[in-house]
Image 1 (cartoon, rainbow, N blue to C red):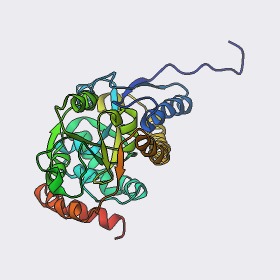
Image 2 (cartoon, rainbow, N blue to C red; image 1 turned 90 degrees about the horizontal axis):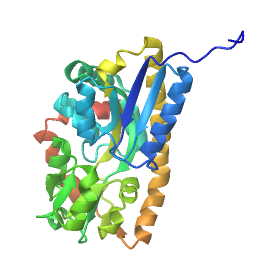
Image 3 (tube, one colour; image 1 turned 90 degrees about the vertical axis):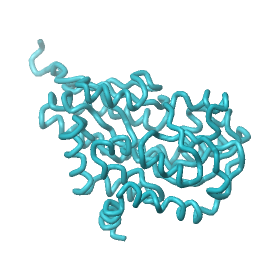
Amino acid sequence: MTAGLSLPAAAETTLRIGTVLAPNDPMGQGLDKFKADVEKATNGEVVIEVFHNSQLGDTTEMLDQARAGGNVGTVTDVARLSSFVPSLAIMSAPFLFDTYEEADKFALSDAYLGWGEELKQKAGLVMLASNWYQGARHALTQKPISSPADLKGVRMRTIGAPVWIETIRAMGAEPTPIAWGEVYSALQLGTIDAAEAQPTAIKGAKLYEVIKNVTLTGHIQLVTALVVGADAWDQISPENQKIVRDLAVEDGRYASGLTIELGEKALADVAAAGVTVSEVDLAPFKEAVKSVYSMLELKSEAAIVNKVLGR
């Protein structure tokens, strides 16, 4: 070997990061950047392989693989992790965060990071960063809606975690958890009547082809976490762990910026495809979901959020 040149170190570990979203989704673009950044910063000692479009399975399946010891990770809504650490459900609580900046600030607070440590101990999962913002969730329906009463009897697909299920139920609909990859066909076949999703995902999954109305409820800000299995994580040196964590936060902000930028364009494209996009008085919806906080015992967590945010 020529003097003065060094070859990249052999991979210390390989992390296979999967997502249910399309490669052009902001989360997909963020993961591709994360791969490049991590491999460069660790001199190839940590290799990231990215799998889009549910190639490694649905989000729950990827979390199961990670917990079983696989070198697998995913971008997940934090509420899915609340079965292990109930307090984590607060990240998906209805009408709690008004902006991405608020969620980003809370995701780096001592209280939240403490719950992350608890997650590793109880579930064998490590949250690298919880500031990967996918956007505000809106109601996708066949008939126009203007109040919770309009959702009575409507089977609405949602995420299968208690805070999502109870939020959708409180909003008036019948929560119906199914895998994201099945939503298009379920709407097309009438197996479900409605769904709820963020603008970039509505466009990415082409749901504008099978729904007629998008009502801008913004009932939950979808703030997600980049999570990996603890077994794979513990194979990485402390120095490289810090590099990976710092880049997860940095690239989470990059992906979130794309979400905000592309979300407005996605809504415009959905409207251009013939879907009615409309605003609604949020007061009755906000009133309806208040019960979710007491039902799921999240009032103290909500108080912690308010304290961290100085409100």
